[in-house]
Length: 168
Ligand SMILES: CC(C)(COP(=O)(O)OP(=O)(O)OC[C@H]1O[C@@H](n2cnc3c(N)ncnc32)[C@H](O)[C@@H]1OP(=O)(O)O)[C@@H](O)C(=O)NCCC(=O)NCCS
Image 1 (cartoon, rainbow, N blue to C red):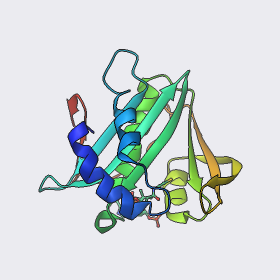
Image 2: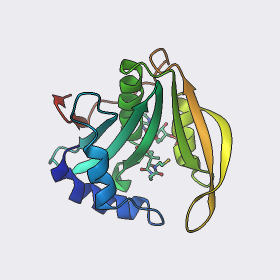
Image 3: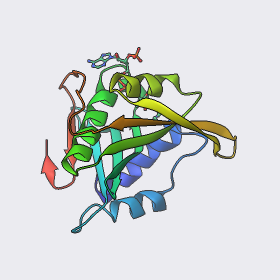
């Protein structure tokens, strides 16, 4: 993901996270941590055949611990394996960066995302009460141990992911 992706990403963000969409400033400050020595973030976008952004995901890796900052797929691409491809990239990147654990928070009322994480071997490790504001929805905290060695589920390969600095 590069700065010129922020506007189209924000359009998806507002639809996919209507209650707690990130602002442009949040994406700008995340991307500022992707392109210098010691950068702690890794952000990617997936494009469909026409170059439209179909999904995006971001990782933070600090002190040997990884966090899935965000992951989202445009609704018309749900169920095509794109969420799995994006998560695969984050798990691999966490492994490359030597993270011992990969953590994430997910709304307790989001079973679709929880199933995605369970397929990758994430396990529930706790609950953060009232984590998502203003509604006060709880977050389930999930953890994948040793992402470098985690077996990854199969996914189809019909969508291209574009990571800053690398074509995949
Ligand atoms: C959560 C989210 C990222 C999942 O994305 P997705 O692209 O639908 O995920 P996948 O296609 O990989 O998996 C979804 C389903 O499709 C199935 N599937 C269909 N074809 C598939 C394929 N070729 N490869 C892998 N899975 C496939 C999966 O088995 C899975 O089934 P299940 O839900 O019954 O377990 C997406 O729903 C989303 O963006 N939601 C809104 C934002 C959000 O909630 N983000 C998470 C915040 S914590």
